[in-house]
Length: 105
Image (cartoon, rainbow, N blue to C red; front, side, top):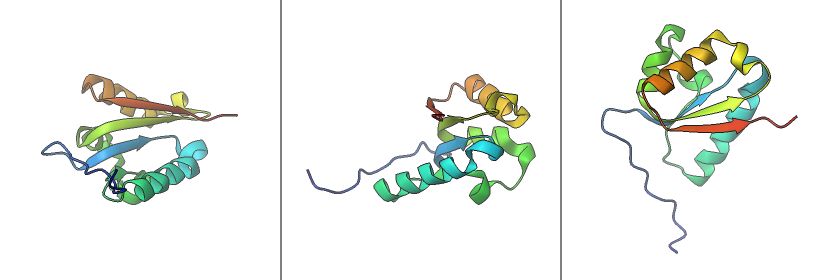
């Protein structure tokens, strides 16, 4: 073991390794922690998080398109959010790899 973080590759034309999908009201703090922890382990990882990267809410599908893997953070109200459902739908339509994280109560 080299004790070095792995080299991350990203598909040509994509911007982010990971897109964090969450509902703002119940998931914002947790996904910020997830992003921070991943950045500590993998310093070169590029993670989309709305508070850092969102410029246009109307472009959610484009952000999904430009991401390699989609993480759905399932917290209370997630499936009642119109924007979260847009992210789910576009991820499935684009056949993106998906990671599910469910918030423990």
